[in-house]
Length: 314
Image (cartoon, rainbow, N blue to C red; front, side, top):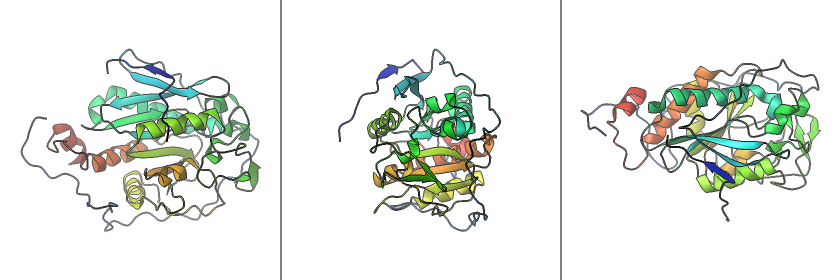
């Protein structure tokens, strides 16, 4: 498929052998499976929050200004011309991608979480493991922020639900629980989802996490014959404490981003935060670091006795 170059690139200038150590042991194989000796938390009986037009409490979203040594670039623009930016940490050829704010102001705490990831890895660059890279898209729907924290803030400036606008099992009828939402006239009709698609096709991620709220659970993407990446769901559940459910049964979801990624063989998870107000940073950072530890042990040419790997993964 044709790959597009990002619209704007602003790139700034951003293994000593040791004695053998024992790292976290993950199984090998294709597809990889995690140990099952530790029980994965069971999803409690919950009901998705009823969507309303009433705004949630306003969440302060700080304005991120690129530092001189940040690697940050735009992959496209929103309907109203706002930049969709990616912050890049590490030098690996294929990234782990963290995406916040696909539902704009309606799930603004996911943008706060992504901003906190950026601040953390700015301050702790050694926590990006050798051979890996983390790309962070803090706000996949910047126009939605301007539309507020009520239901309208979930959509882009065209009124489209961007997580119903992807190519896998897209439908011209889409829902949020029992409310019909606009999936767009066709898959990838919206500039935001189109920009993300082209970025993913170029970046070829090792894994992707989309942050949502507020079910307090983990779901893995799947589509057609593409199976679940259960290893990733289990790993994230064990490291974050959110329960992993291998199927979303609350209502039918069509045109979902993680399902489209799964169809292309890219492990992709939805992590639903527990509320729409808290970022739950510490437990989500634990999940990202655990995912790094899993993937670094499968990265060719990496010295697993590197002190940074030992510190985070031993």
